[in-house]
Length: 131
Image (cartoon, rainbow, N blue to C red):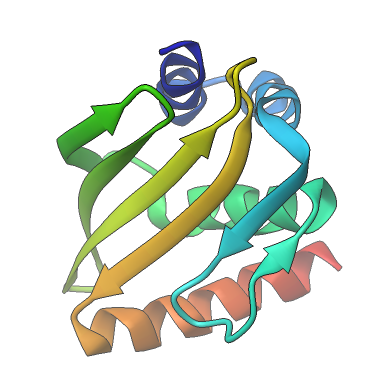
């Protein structure tokens, strides 16, 4: 699955400038992003790129790991974990790909509630810093 391999390469990349270009290229122009803290789906490459690049800054780093993977021909569910400020975060990325390997739908689900609340605050700060 080319798209999934590209996603993993993006997450592991140490060259942030190159990774940002790779993420942009990986997203379908009409991609839909669903956040655990935003009520409505976010539509389009621009907003999805903003959310995913912000999430990588908030959640990424040495503590972030994917601990499970379930996939089919059109997508994958990737379970992740991390600890930020002493709060253990457990979640899943549900990713759908088109026939060219581009992401068409990306849904994030997170638990427990205090992790969601913390991510909501940290993501709001990160998104505001980008504006």
